[in-house]
Image 1 (cartoon, rainbow, N blue to C red):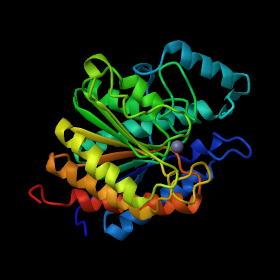
Image 2 (tube, helix red, strand yellow; image 1 turned 135 degrees about the vertical axis):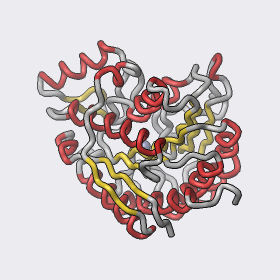
Image 3 (tube, protein in one colour; image 1 turned 90 degrees about the vertical axis):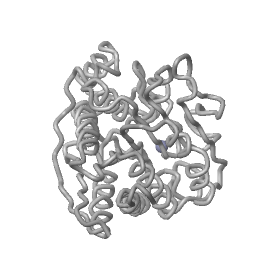
Image 4 (cartoon, protein in one colour; image 1 turned 45 degrees about the vertical axis):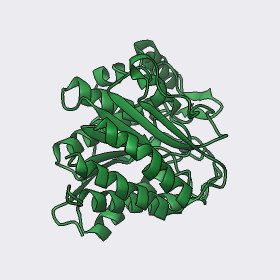
Length: 324
Ligand code: ZN
């Protein structure tokens, strides 16, 4: 039970204009994930606040993405859009959606850090973790979580930030952006082999960032037990040692057994267990709220249930007294 806990749901129906016929990254995902946030909060007895986010300001985006890259995407949309690569599209309305997605993630990160929200969930499209400074890919245009992390740092709100990524795909964009950065930890579980092919355990960060990248690969067929062990025995101890001031989650749900794009065997219970452990870790470090942003997850029922389990788990973990 979670008396006094607050869940902030950041989403905007206008993101649904980002759409391409037959593509798995489709508008219905947003509604399903938003339902999951509300249901998880309700089951946990937390108060839910829904908010339409403001678009990210241009400076926040340009802290991560090259000006020419953003201009090229805007120009592409201006011609009617199309395919950036075989997986990734720009439709009319996509760039407004991408700016809202980044803005929602920034607002969620701020609200969680200040304690205004116990859990802030940015239910956004397009997703972000494959986008790098000058590259779209894997359905992603702007790297929402990187923009939010850099925003917290630029505003002087948090220095040491942990990004946890449990999407079934490796967040190659996020890793590339922070590869040299000693103050941003990136921890990921992902199926291997699978798109995009990066995220080998030996990829640990470069230069001053060496030791801040943590990649654990999961073989096709890996189940809840393997997923939970990867987080509780390998990744979360690294996060603990890093002692972050803020925790941001790239929350993708395509490792679920019903997901059509990958081959893992997770259930919503796996996400619940890991989310609870993340919440407990945050509580130990005096972190009052956790911000999550939607990445992948392409089976609508699995997405709804897994998001709900995540919200419940995070709230449960964050309610743990720091001494426990
Ligand atoms: Zn994914």
